[in-house]
Image (tube, rainbow, N blue to C red; front, side, top):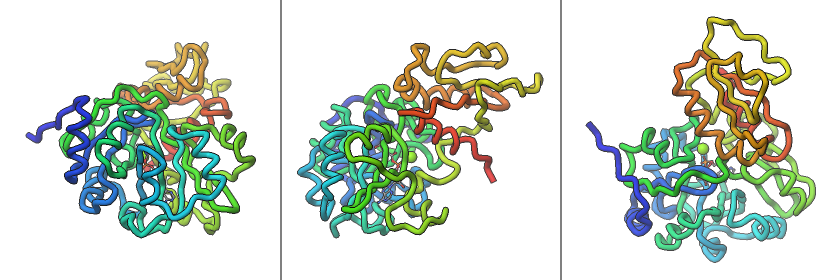
Length: 330
Ligand code: TXA
Ligand code: MG
């Protein structure tokens, strides 16, 4: 039987493994990442292999501070500077023109690179001690729910990697918001931990869901930002989005579990219920989302019903995840 790797809080051990070409999972404020030295193509290749991730889907490069960007990005548009000033360290990823030093494997051959400084003290310490930028996708098998606890990583990828640095439960619980910035336009490629409203408060209105200059066809968008792929972030159990005002469509023989942001008077119609925030707080809902979805997925249900979130703030990113999780497997 293959052994599960160690889980611990030994930052120096994790940093040494990264420097030596290892693959290490680590906590961030958004979700757990599966890290490798971004300048080591062999280590990065192992990340793709472990995740069973197609190599057309580029990775985010994590840095400890803005000085480290010098090796990675060729130029920084002024709007990107404003966003970095406001939201870093934090759940915002910025797509910028890359330098020649960034291996093609990291960026899937694109001429841009995704970068972010995570808002998590232990992750920053890890990046500092490693002394290299760390390419890290979310630490889940491709297409499935992101991990927000070290145990989630252990159960899915634990036998395939070198170490899991336990950073505790992720505070934000949603992946970073991904923005592509050029001198002329800013576009949100993936809704995430920074609400669009907060970005617009800093730089004015932004477009959502397309890469500046990209032809607007599904396959192009998918190639540019596969986090925008139709089916993603998904449980094994079929998931259906229902409106709270109209939840009465369940066959009694069916075991249906409910995922709801806030308490609901309809709870007794379901076999089991996950309320994400009794205090009716969207931030708390986001923080609990992935773990609750995993519990429902493990409960042996016929179906997961999810109430739509309010379409504002983090609710927009949560609705985006639900939509992708609900797409039928073809
Ligand atoms: O919160 C997060 O972003 C987490 C933590 C670990 O930092 N990471 C994460 O990585 O969610 P991943 O690989 O699961 O998602 C990265 C997203 C993908 O949708 C990818 O297509 C997009 O960023 N991306 C990366 N580089 C890109 C680029 N050069 N142009 C467009 N999209 C890019
Ligand atoms: Mg991911």
